[in-house]
Length: 81
Image (tube, rainbow, N blue to C red):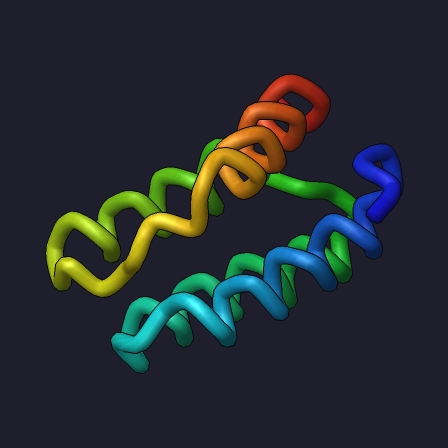
């Protein structure tokens, strides 16, 4: 994934959430953010990250993916915030 291209980042996040988020309401909210972001050619990474964190805390709906995924989040937050 090229971290500088919004379309690649959003496609990666969409795939990641489809595999990781089990609650359908949370997944729908994340998909809405991603879809609107595609139209705006932007990655609102803070909003996406906060929504994801809120869902995981509320529903305990996530298993930690390891250091690799933490590095991905760090890079995304550094580049897109």
